[in-house]
Image 1: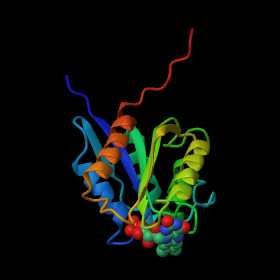
Image 2: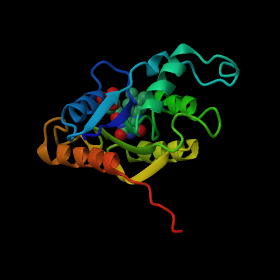
Image 3: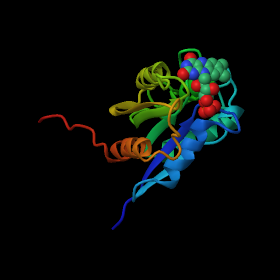
Length: 183
Ligand SMILES: Cc1cc2nc3c(=O)[nH]c(=O)nc-3n(C[C@H](O)[C@H](O)[C@H](O)COP(=O)(O)O)c2cc1C
């Protein structure tokens, strides 16, 4: 019997020619056997999180996001860095996924983050903030799945070593098993 692990992918850039979106697409196309990367579109349609909007029927874009993530086994953010932190669109998506409190779609989902920026640091502050936010939102942060890749001197979309590290991170996330507590 074959089993598929679905990874919901949240891309932190909205621009049409986003390096990080293209990276997410490459990772999807090179996903390990048995792993499906589902790139969740529609983050631009989410209103800014507002508890008033979430009091009754949530906006359609939020419902769609929650359903896609709830249906996934894992969540991976693929994101650049804006002004030393994660782009607002990604933070907003995590906010929507964090509610209802304690029962949000992200709660308990193994979570990782990767991304590339054209600086020597590769977006490491954004990635650190992303895992902190996702962890507080209730995700299970998989600490080994964090790759901040500089795109300064390498074509991250084709470089074998870089893609090996990134697909390795996807594999680690997909294979992650929560530690079982001792009896
Ligand atoms: C508003 C803004 C702020 C940025 N701040 C940072 C930053 O703090 N650190 C960084 O590494 N790159 C920063 N950048 C550069 C982005 O990393 C770069 O534009 C990247 O290609 C964007 O990702 P994308 O190609 O996936 O859209 C910033 C870009 C913008 C538009």
